[in-house]
Image (cartoon, rainbow, N blue to C red):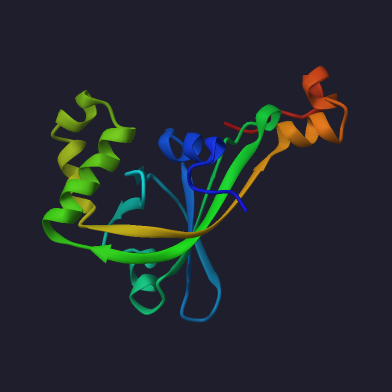
Length: 163
């Protein structure tokens, strides 16, 4: 099992990728949503509105999964982290929410009164995720070890994804 310190896990946690957060709906189904996140070296933080489905789900079940992947067919790699979530409010939430926003928005966007304050006002809570188990994958290694570097040698084998 990979560790939080493994290079591929660190690359994804420290990079600017869009993650997928999964939580449990009250009917037992899974709710998945794309999220921005910030990693402080130990925990993962997702800022959101207290009115969202994910926030409501966490009030009754703190189990979550976060998937971060490269979304690049020629170098597909990723990580899924299963953990426990805690909802933060007030100053702690505001501080960590600002970290999330700084990671994904330019200084100009944050300073724009039509953008920065809107995000800061909408995102009134922060979800703190404490990692438990970690699963990672790297299709580049599969390509080398199993497919004889077929994908690396023939980039047109994999069709481009929609943008």
